[in-house]
View 1 (spheres, rainbow, N blue to C red):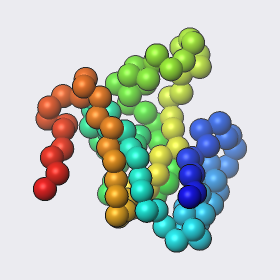
View 2 (cartoon, one colour):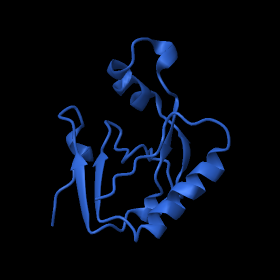
View 3 (tube, rainbow, N blue to C red):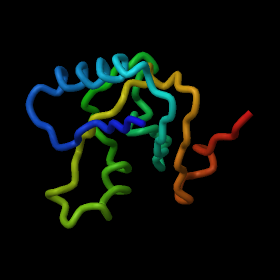
View 4 (tube, one colour):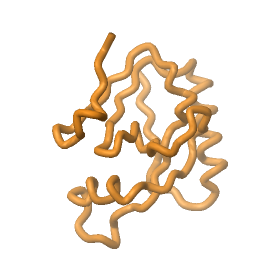
Amino acid sequence: MNVHIPDGTISGDYDAYCAQYEQCIKAAGGIDLQILGIGRNGHVGFNEPTSSLASRTRLKALSRETVEDNRHFFANESEMPKCAITMALALFSIPVVFFFLPLAVPSRCRCQSH
């Protein structure tokens, strides 16, 4: 089993890092299982609602709601990230996807399996 999560601590050439990240996924034969969170504003894995379905893995500015919802993970406001590396929506053609949906997510953002 391989587990690979984008490194949220990198700095520098984000475009090169994101391209390398996607290349590693391709070299491993793709993704068999994906675990994603859905935010209060409906974002999926930090792909905020304004993200394109054709987007690639990239550095994405987080919405005010997303930053606030993650406040409890950080000791003070200066540590709270305003951006995150998020995987390409185009990569989400994955056989098995688990979505974690906090109870605070409005019902309009909840999905049903068909």
